[in-house]
Amino acid sequence: DGGITQSPKYLFRKEGQNVTLSCEQNLNHDAMYWYRQDPGQGLRLIYYSQIVNDFQKGDIAEGYSVSREKKESFPLTVTSAQKNPTAFYLCASSQTVNTEAFFGQGTRLTVV
Amino acid sequence: KQEVTQIPAALSVPEGENLVLNCSFTDSAIYNLQWFRQDPGKGLTSLLLIQSSQREQTSGRLNASLDKSSGRSTLYIAASQPGDSATYLCAVKRLSGNNDMRFGAGTRLTVKP
Image (cartoon, rainbow over all chains, first blue to last red; front, top):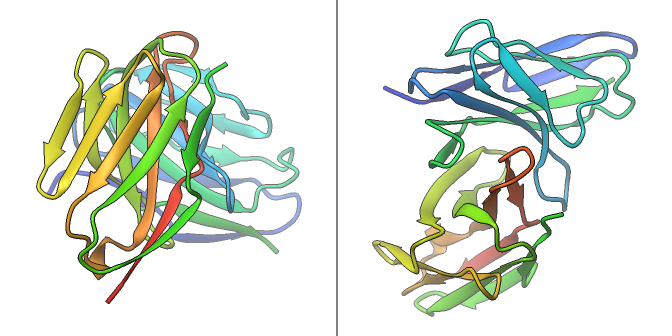
């Protein structure tokens, strides 16, 4: 069935490591987004992509990187430059920038 | 800069009660407003999407209204049930900047049996 799949559900990172979070969608959506959610706060945009091979920084892009080589995939790498990476990460997609957005089930990243 | 505020932060009601959740935003230049539901530790589930030209949308026991000029939206839940317990988030899609969604911090709803 159609939807957005994020993996893994839980991820543990050691200090100084880079880790990559996966986001795959089979909705044929052009736009994809990565958000970060911290307790008691709203979601904050990390990166977004409106089309394949193009992506833009959001409000909190520092310490993160993305790629958009395929329409259905938008992986997020959390680099060692991200000083406070422990959070819940959510991926979303929409047909275009002004249509309904759908979210994956999230990845919880913890630094150990 | 678009700011989105949701009041109250938490709400507890007895089963069967009708209730209203509020969302306000500072910039009326929006494409749309979307209401989501989030269960603990889960992703967001889309409930209703209201385009900027629309006044309201309905789905089952849910009704969302939009007053773009005053920067307000409400989510009305009729005959609440314990299964409605969750955090409800509103998000506005901006016309300018990143065209991204700006989220409120959410209202945590508890419906007591």
